[in-house]
Image (cartoon, rainbow, N blue to C red; front, top):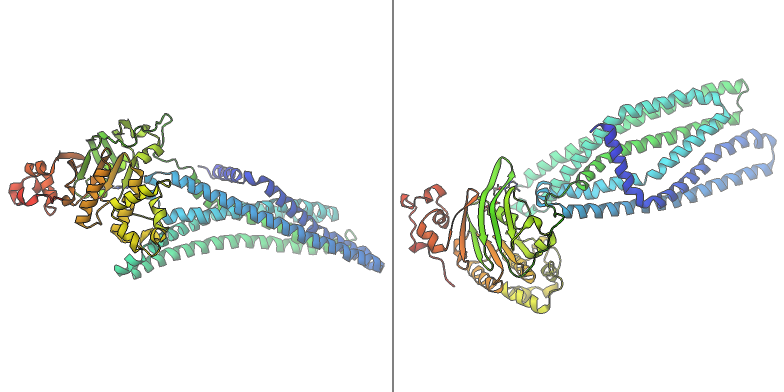
Length: 602
Ligand SMILES: Nc1ncnc2c1ncn2[C@@H]1O[C@H](COP(=O)(O)OP(=O)(O)OP(=O)(O)O)[C@@H](O)[C@H]1O
Ligand SMILES: [Mg+2]
C-alpha cells in the first residue's frame, strides 16, 4: 500500500477511535488554546511597557502593566492546568476503551491465531501499543494550540514589521522540507523499535512463565544470553529511533538559531532606520521564539504520529483480523443437549497445505457410545478432537455433531454441547470454587457435590486450608497435575456436554484412580458420546470401541480383543516399542500374544 494512503488509513482509524471523546477533546483544546492566547499577549504588553510606560515615568501605568501581566499569567496557569486534567482523563478513557475492545477482539479469534502469535506479542499490543495511541490522543489538543499560536504569532509579527516576517519565511519552508525528508526514516525507525519491543516482551513472557523448568534444565545462562540479544536489539533500535528524532530536532534548532540571527541583524538595522521601535524589536524577538515553538511542537507531534503509526498498524493488524472460524448467517442451535452423536465424513485437514494431517477420514460415534481414539504420536488424534470442537474447520468433507454440520451450528451452542479437555489442565489463580464453576456458574450445591465425588476431589477439598475458597496458584500450580485434571473433569461434569472429548485428559492420574473415575464418568454420561484419546492402552477397558488412527485415516476399529486378534497396528501400539511397519507383521518378532495383552478389569 502506498505510504500516503496508509497514513490516511491510520489517521482515519485514529479519528474513529477518538470520536466518542470529541466533546472532551474540544473542551481541553479550547482551554489549552485560551491559555496560549494569554501566553501570546505578554510580548505586546512588554512592547507597550518599553515604548510607552517606561519613557512616561508614570507609576500608575507601571502598576497597571504589572497587574495586567499578573492576570495574564494566573489565567494562563489556571486554564492550562484544567485543560491538562481533562486531556489526561480523556487519554486514559481512550486507552481503557481500546484495551477492552482489543481483548474482546482477541477473545473472538480462532485457535490458529492463538497458536501462531506469542502471548507476549499480544500483551505488548494491548499494553504498550495502546498506551502509545492514548498518549498521542492527549497531544491532539496541542495540535490546535500549535496551529492557533502559529497563526496568532505570524499576524502579530506582520503587524509589527512585515518585511521581517518575509525575511524568516524561507526558514519555515526549510522546516517543512526537513519534515518531508525525515518522514520515512522516522517511521521505519519507530516501527523497528516497536517490533523489537514486541519480541522482547514475548520472550520475557514465555521465560517468566517457566523459570522453574528453565532452572531444572540448567538453562538460565542460555536464556539470559537470548534475552541479552533481544534486549540489546531493542536498545539499539530505540537508540536509532532517538538519534533520528534528535537529528530531526537539531535541524529545527538550527532554523531557530538562523532566524534569531536574521531578526537581530535585520531588526537592528530596521531600528536604526526608524522603521521599528526598540520595544517592537524586543516583542518581535520574543515572538520569533514563539513562532518556532508551535512549529517545533507541530513537528514533535508529527514525529510522535510517525511513531504511533507503528503502534496503530500493530493494533489494526489485530482489529482487522477475521476469525478463521466464523458462524454462518443461518447457524442453528443444537437440539437435545444431553444426547450426543458425532460423525466425520471424508474429513480432510492440513495445518499447512503441503503437510496433510487427515485425509478422507470417516468416523461415526453413536449416541451414548464411548470410543477410544488411539494412534502413534503425531498421527492426528488431537486434530480430530479439534475438528469436532470446531477449533479448526475441515478443508474437505464434513464434521457433524448431533446430525448437524458443525459449520452450521451457533458457536456458543456448539461450545455448550461439546467439551474438549486437553492434557494440560490450565486453571486460573482464583479459588477452587471459582475454577469449578467457571463454565457453569448456576450449578447447585448438589450438582457440585456429585461432580466432586465422581472426580474424587473430596480428599483435596478437606486438605485445602480454606476449602473451596483456597486460591490454587498461577495456572493452578498449587495443586498436583492429577488434581488439576480432576478439577477440570468435575467442571465439565457440571456442564454435562452432549459430546465429551478427553484428549489425554486423565494422563496424570494413577492407573487405578483413572479406571475408577472413567467408569464413574461413563455411567454419569450414559447418553452422551465420549471420544477418549490415550496412549495408555490399559485405560481403555471401559470404552465400547477402539479406533486406530494412522496416516490420517482410521486404520482399524473394534474391541480390544478383536483388534489384538487381528494383530495389526493396534498390537504394535499396545507394545509401544514396536514401530508400525513391523507391527503389521506380528510374526516378524514383535512377540506379542493375545494372552499377555489382556486389559485389566475393575
Ligand atoms: N497448530 C499446528 N500447526 C501446524 N502443525 C500442527 C499443529 N498442531 C499439530 N500439528 C501437526 O499435525 C500433526 C498431528 O498432530 P496432532 O496433535 O493431531 O497429533 P496427535 O496424534 O494428537 O499426537 P500426540 O499423541 O503426540 O498428542 C503432527 O504432525 C503435528 O506436528
Ligand atoms: Mg495429541
